[in-house]
Image (tube, rainbow, N blue to C red; front, side):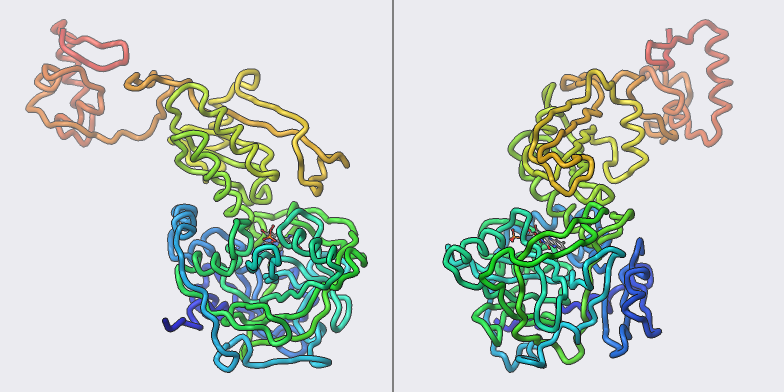
Amino acid sequence: MKVDLERFRLRHFLESLGADELERREAPTDLADVAQALEGNPKAVWFTRAGPEGAALAGNVAGSRSRIARAFGVPKELLLREVLERLKGEYPVEEINSEIAPAQQIVLTGEQADFTKLPAHLQHGLDGAPYISASVDFAFDAANGWTNVGMRRIMLRGRREAGVDLNAPSDLRAIYQAQLKRGEPLPIAFAVGSHPVDHVAATMRLVGDELALIAALRAAPLAVVKCVTSDLRVPADAEYVLEGYLDARGYAEPEGPYGEFLGYYGAVKANPVFHLTAVTRRRDAVFQTSTISGRMLARTDTAQLNALRAEVIIWRALESAVRGAKAVYATPASGGAFNVRVALESRVPGEARNAIAAAMGCLVNVKHVFVVDPDVDIFSDEQMDWALATRFQADRDLIVASGFRAVPLDPSLAGTRSGAKAGFDLTLPFLAQGQPRPMEHRISGPPLYEGRRFASVEAALADGPKFFAELMAAKGSRDGREIVLALETLQRSGRLARDAEGRYGLK
Ligand SMILES: Cc1cc2nc3c(=O)[nH]c(=O)nc-3n(C[C@H](O)[C@H](O)[C@H](O)COP(=O)(O)O)c2cc1C
């Protein structure tokens, strides 16, 4: 099978974006100004001349749900469904020769491999150094022969040394720690400059070979190429690849501080050292940076990627816990998991609470779960606010539970390792099947004028009781006042009745 080496190229994805999604900066931009240009920017930014070398640099590429959805070729409402569907697929991973691998058009090894020749910029005011953040890592898991893929930031510390954060629980951390027990360094490679689909794949944590996961999410075969200084295989269509190893000294050097994915800084930590052995790249490569932190998390790559990953995990938990989950949304403004919304068609009383328990339990990052009926749009902050205001009694519908494992970066924990979770049941009182919703629980909206036509208001009422709007529809009225007059006539003749719901009828 011939694999298309251009289709999932970052440069082509950027070229496919219109002015609504992409800000193209042709003017020279100092690396010192890159962070400010990206801060809170709803668009991806393509700096065509970054730094004195005039490098091509793209940022915030996956920083909106609509851009990620575009990368998957679907409207954003269908993104989760598409990802869940693609996760079921299988596509081959095919190795190709170095000579035809675009990611190795230029190969720099030894002294030529140099972090300080890459357009890495300082992202946040208190960061320890410039970081490479759109870095997708590839490492072998000796336990099963699979390639593990993740995203890990790289803190520049010199020409060929950098810090990599391996503190949070992850497969790579486990792989590295097993390697440390053997006293051996861990070969690792980072792709920088990738299609958003690859970033989605990298942030998923699923069992299996994660090169195959990239292929599955692309819904296309994946071409890989062997690294020039290790046996690792990396996507052959990446813009840049940074090859090297994590040394066997373990958590040996300070790394950080760094603006973290909850919007605050993470402190300096002891972390492993990455040694750079090669930089390979396309001839016209685009370097990439991911946005991570600050007060506008909803416009960052990290929160958007985290949200999608959380939704996949929560959706699967809901599938086994309750039957009627209709939609799930991890709000990116909360970091993409802390606040989770679920639309649920309850089939029996109590299911909203089961949904809350399932969502709370399936992912450490989930902290607050809001469950609504399917008539509330969970993607709308306004509608969620309305549901909280009108469908919630705090003494009845709030579930608070303490002592859960928590994300240490959450500043509200005040240093403790476990924390509280809360569930908000925003569903209306449960109705047995076929039982109509009482008038006071029905959502008002403009009239729709649906129903059969009749020769007269009287004929319509003889057919059965009707609301005023149905009487207008019955007469094809585009006004309404003539219906008032017809009802007045019936009223005067003593024949007009009204039922408990307010429908008109005949006595
Ligand atoms: C832009 C970005 C940067 C990230 N940086 C790190 C990091 O430096 N350290 C870390 O432990 N996780 C980081 N993550 C989260 C991991 O990539 C994520 O947990 C992934 O699923 C881990 O993969 P693994 O368990 O297969 O190793 C980052 C995520 C994103 C989106």
